[in-house]
Length: 319
Image (tube, rainbow, N blue to C red; front, side):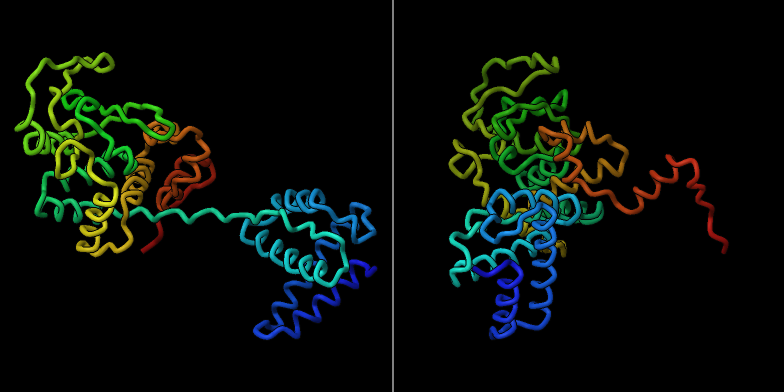
């Protein structure tokens, strides 16, 4: 049976002869496989058939300390191609890479839009065919940082306009209280007048035990953003279409409801809010999620460094 090195040589020759591959592909595979050969040699593995799934998983863990996920994925791709070749050539009895899952690269974070762009979208929302509804959508996605699923599920019984609190059911049906500002309060009042109060069953209000304020009366349209029938919540796809449509009119072609939520959190971070506050505000279970989710602008990072580090000492540049 061929040794590991002999099998690699045969594989590289095949790669060089394959149509559509370049010399760089063969070089890249050679480097990655040589690195793996050094690793199994360090473990004292001399026989090709002693390379098991356990060995490869151990190799992945070691690479995780040194390489980005994209680099690890490339190296695993080289191993997968090599071991598939070795199995087809009957150089090994079983393919140890067969059940090894790839390392998924993290999704790129959305880019926060500027304050100016948000204001432009809000102005366009106010001029739409349904200004009350569309303005509220932007005010709650950006102004309160809601997920789109949380927005469509929001009911009037969860709204306390006087004290400016929302009770939101997030992921895993976990509830949290979310504050909102004056503009969102105005948008909520306008929507209630337009879509809620006309069909209200004027009963007794239920006091908010958490905030001490008064809840809005219950009505036949329980959802803050109802569909055309009035009895069900607006469709998620409809909200997505409204947001992307208004965003495109403003010149922002990559803005989605999630981008508005991300922009809300990013702007609060830039304004001085703590990560702990933003974690609770967004409804993240772990602080690590918030740290990954948020990006800090270069200006904010430099400002924080200048304030925090004793040897920063930024001086004004001469004219």
